[in-house]
Image 1 (cartoon, rainbow, N blue to C red):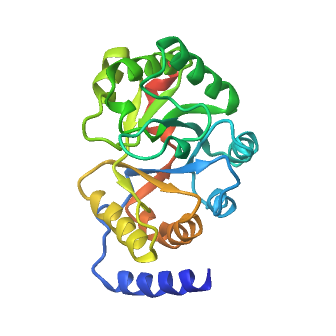
Image 2: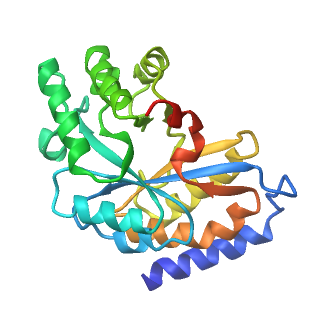
Length: 255
């Protein structure tokens, strides 16, 4: 952690010597940070939950700390969503975890698994996909997932793991509030990459009123938490941190 902290400190010093990124006297833009992969006592969970900003935590169902992580996040005032494991185009099914949604399941079984996941993760206000490049491009499967979300008053957040996904079109047709991920902080686990992605988020705010960005606990968890913590003051010059639910006020009308 000292190595991470020193690297972040050096990069922050260089960053603050560059021209200001501030483009409004009063922050009117919004940043919603989602942290994936909670639920299995993953590295960095404690550090992420301790960040002094509102965040949204995506918790995988049916794992040893799914319920306790959800309860802890809720007590701290964070949004909780279900990180629903979905079949990818490439990769092993063993990476998905229990209760995964796959394209070979019957429509009845898909509905049942989504319902059970909702029951397993307390305080959830929405769902996002874990992996899922194959499922999010499958109209039949996603229609069922989104229908269940609508019935429970849940939003859907598309992690954008496939350029061919059908989520946005179906969500509009079904009247399900949805958001789309615009940036991964730590798809590469190095400190340099995570810092670069955080700077990219700040640049994106010049052209967007809100940004949804995803990080992870697990292998990059402690690095991601440390870097986000150090960049909070810089981001706050340009935007306010919000929970994902704040970006979809229409959610209140579908419950």
